[in-house]
Length: 461
Image (cartoon, rainbow, N blue to C red; front, side):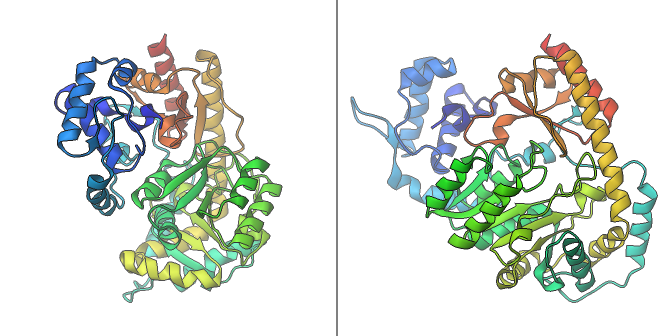
């Protein structure tokens, strides 16, 4: 148990320090993040910089609520029996709204701050007229009134054609249209994961996916890299993995890609052990050049692989249109889950997606130019004013993953004081291993990135 991860943000609640600590501990107990004995009062007090009496008072509150149990001279432990019912209630209530998720930064941002935490990309600068024309075309298209859980047949065929062009055999009936890549992750999780099942994923990773896995009571198996042969060997020996979540191209937040040899081995693992692999390619067109990287399913079109795509990161048009490419034996299950979720994606936005796909290449080219410019500006400024910070060179992505070589939470706090919003690395890694890292989103113009990084450097100085 990493107590810093378990108690992240505990000071932000209401009431006395003891009450806030008790609230944070209670949430962790209900979510199952504390399974064994709690730290001794004196040890936890020293770690948090509190008095022993404050910790003793927090523990006392939880004993009164029957969340903890202890005996004189023994360990303080979770009261497993009395935690069963609130844990079950929390799992049901947390579907998509789990406390402590990254969604808070979307729904409650600081409007006055220069926000470099959100990787929400706008329309690329020089294709606004193309996007406006697509909206006009969609508004003139006949609206479909019948529910189509699989999605608009024309849109499904257009999406399938993009996969055929990169060597992955795909027909329209392999495709289910979703409301963004995020819903696609939700549907994949519902298809494969029961409460308590293990989901393996490379960390750091897109925190929205972690939120979804937690909301569905999955146990997250964080690994360093699928490119490590030892990691795949361990997964091959593990019978408890229900799903593997991967990004074959420009993983959020690191911008890394899966090597071809790793991709082939991951696909063989999925086929041999019938483990569902999710290949999240929402950032497929966010390269810094024109490089094309094949999806995992290109190595075996019928393996249990769900290939996720999205238009939003490419077009920035706010379409909320994504999709899942699935083998035929799984596509019907995905469509049924989609129907249970929201019946069907809106026909108007699906029409917009069709119109945008007519111009995908010029839009994608504009996106690549824009991201390359922003990446260059951010790294150049960082080298000038924060030379102690480091990063791995990226070939693409919508963000920059930075090792600050200091406590990232302190950096985030200093940045906030300077009017800049950043996201600390712990949101991207449940193991707590990313405590020195921050993500700088490339969603703002190059000038904003330069100004934000300079402000942070001044604050730290």
